[in-house]
Length: 153
Image 1 (cartoon, rainbow, N blue to C red):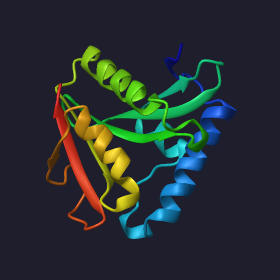
Image 2 (cartoon, rainbow, N blue to C red; image 1 turned 90 degrees about the vertical axis):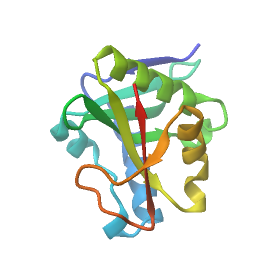
Image 3 (cartoon, rainbow, N blue to C red; image 1 turned 120 degrees about the vertical axis):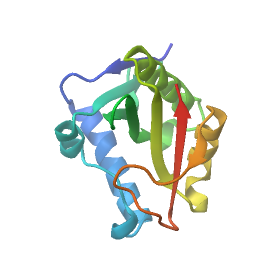
Image 4 (cartoon, rainbow, N blue to C red; image 1 turned 180 degrees about the horizontal axis):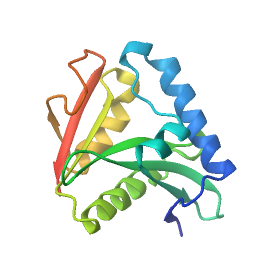
């Protein structure tokens, strides 16, 4: 059985997945269109980081909820390790993050992801959870390499 927990203190496994995510996003997207945050930047932003453990207890996915405005959060750094993909971990983690946001009394969740083919699986995951495309939010600006999505909680 998988489990998702809040990461109170960063540990090497969480740091490693966040570093892999940062490297992959930085490689896939030009700097001016890349909005990925380092583990340190996530912590500094006040984001709550969650880790998903697989059936063996290994951390294989991470995601974060970053405070955004009044009554809203932004999903950040959703990443399933490449070797663990295709097992439904992304959906399990996303469901948990949205449930946590609801428990915290948030009214909405937002996210930014890539518009290119390499991000199609991520977009499908978010669409399947009920996210709808929206205009750029917060400090984001229109960018042909980004799409913006939101969901009412």
